[in-house]
Structures are given as structure tokens and as C-alpha cells.
Length: 261
Image (cartoon, rainbow, N blue to C red; front, side, top):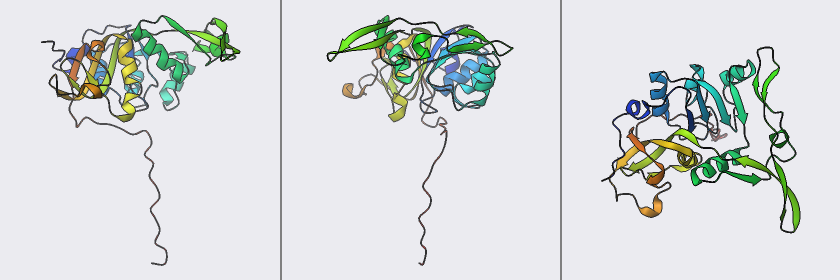
């Protein structure tokens, strides 16, 4: 029987080398594979090139790797919650490939589906297509690396000619994801917002490592409820249902007043 389980997060990430490319799941702080991230931090791996929707916050998620200066490049769509990210980028310590969110999702999905590239309307008429978007600054504040010009073609859609920009798919050496539950064959079920980028990141990695809150036996998951088939997953680590989960900004309604009561 196929059994993809590993004994610990440390064992599962032990062969990730310096300079590896990683697709990492999570949306904000939802669905961050924090046990795998912390194991990677503990083993000292550096010069990582990471593709993820965002880079966590200063002390959580991918932010812990960033603070330890283990990341050399981020490919992300949102970077607004991390002051250290801003500092490293503007000082020339970190390379950033800023990518529209939907485009990033499709680049990951395409990579996992064997599609080399695709055309999209998103970014047409902007520096995303025209190039020149800063990717890395020099120490003196000048642009050391800028985004390239991308191919733009016109296609007829619904009888109307429209411009589309060519975007290349993303395939990474490894991917790290978090799921609610999984079985020993690698079939995964995600919970609510954690389903946003985790399945796509999993698809894009040549070796996918999944941390799951609950590990079950093959056959226990309803086939119609599986969000990602085990063909995309290579290693599974059970981290338990008590694993810490954080919220970026807790917002609650003001208590109702009982004036005059």
C-alpha cells in the first residue's frame, strides 16, 4: 500500500537545499504550513526563492524565514503586512516579483497541469506587461533588476478584439501546504479560506510536502469531498488539531447598548 506519511516536519523538509524554489500555501495567515516553515527555519536552509500569495507577518508564517534572512526572492501578489519585507526590499536585500493575485493563482495551476504559459487580460497597459517594474533595488536606491517586457497579442473575444499578455507557468522544486485532513495516499481536504492557495501551491511543486491536522486511513475520506487528489502530494506529516493558528486583525462588533434599561 502507498504510504506517504513521514514521522516529523523536520524529516519531511530535511532534503530541501539552499537556493531551492518553494511554492507555499496560505492566504494571509489562513492555512499557513507553519510546522514545515519552522522546521525549515530550524535546519538553517537559506537563499530560498519562494512563491506565495503573501509573506506572512513579522513574526508568523513566512515572516519567520524572512526575519532570519533566509529568503532571496519572493513572488507574491500582496506584501502589505510585513514591515521587515518593506525594509529588505527597499534596501536591496530582497528581490520581489509582484504578480496580480489571479495571475499568480493561474500560474501555479498551469504549472501543476503541464501548461507552459497562457494569455490573460490582467496587466495589459501596465508595467506588468510593459516592463520596468522594480524587482530589486541597489544599495543606492537605483533599480538593479527590473521586470521584462512581456508578449502582448490581440485575440477576438465575443466579436471584440482585446489585448492579452503572455504569462509563464510556475513550477517549483518543492511545495509546502497545510490541510485540514488527509489520508496516507495523499488525498487532502482543506478548510474554508485555507483552500484558496494551498491546492494550487501543492500542484506546482515537483515534491509536495503537506502538513495535515488529522491523518486518516485510505477510504475514510468521501471521494466527493476530496479537494486535492494524492497524485500531487508526496509527503504527509500529521501536526494535530491543536496547532496554533493566528488571525491578522481580529475585528469584532461593538457591544449592543442597553441605554435606559
